[in-house]
Image (cartoon, rainbow, N blue to C red; front, side):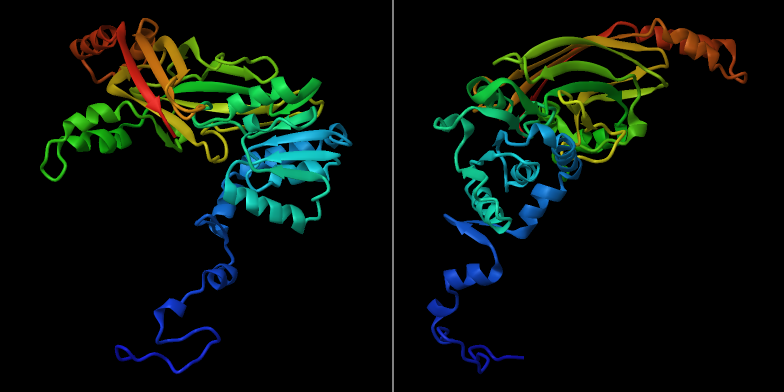
Length: 388
């Protein structure tokens, strides 16, 4: 064991054990650790890993859409919006693009991207820009726009506005957008155990009543991975984006929905996810963020109801789903959601009667039927804010 004040007997050029100011050279540290440093921001390999492999499904889908449609990229000019470390830009170059304009506003991602482009000898084809797409003006018209623009619950923290802007300003007539079609879905969910842990715990936190926090916490949706076994109802589409047609503010919407329940249970929440399509080319590619398929970084968005609702096989939940981009948030950094619902159990009585237990007397059965019918026309409205 070393005694305090006694340093190992070694010498290194530029290193004086008695002088703390020479312990670390910033240039030496950056070089030996292998990070890219810009204005005191560091990008470590784990962050690069997250940019690529945590997006495994979407990355493979984008690559497949580009590679199997390579004839549409040959000798074309491509614009890649928010290109991160440049992976999609490299896919386009490898597919035969004449020029790739690669836009990335994040300084550390941009610097890493430049080095990767040089490492792969595509600096004569890929031209990286460190800016937002709205800040670039001196580029030619492009034949294809590529952007992984989707955010949580499709719209929160998305780049949809940027793609609309670039389409109207830079895309040639009959140009392509990858991806071009996205559909948003919802379904009813049973998740009582997690709901109990997440919300009821506020009633007693280390013997302190914090129930006021519980009421507020219902307004924040949860981004998490659902078990497909927790889905109680049919799946209903509530919104569709056609990237060739959508205009500014058309991403604010109010659409009706209808969910039919396929089992008897307690409805805890409504969950949402989306499908993404590259549909304009003959060789179509599609991936989904649903709980019935492989994990994606978007997971699912879960809107917990303040009170559980008893539903039966055949019950119907109807209402409207309203979404708007928060007018006070920058870009699409935050969205407001309003969910109205009305439960109809008229079609559930027959299903309930079918499952009668022979051991029960008529009085118990009558009580269950009354309970079912008593749940008719349950109505409610909840507001949510999603900012991540």
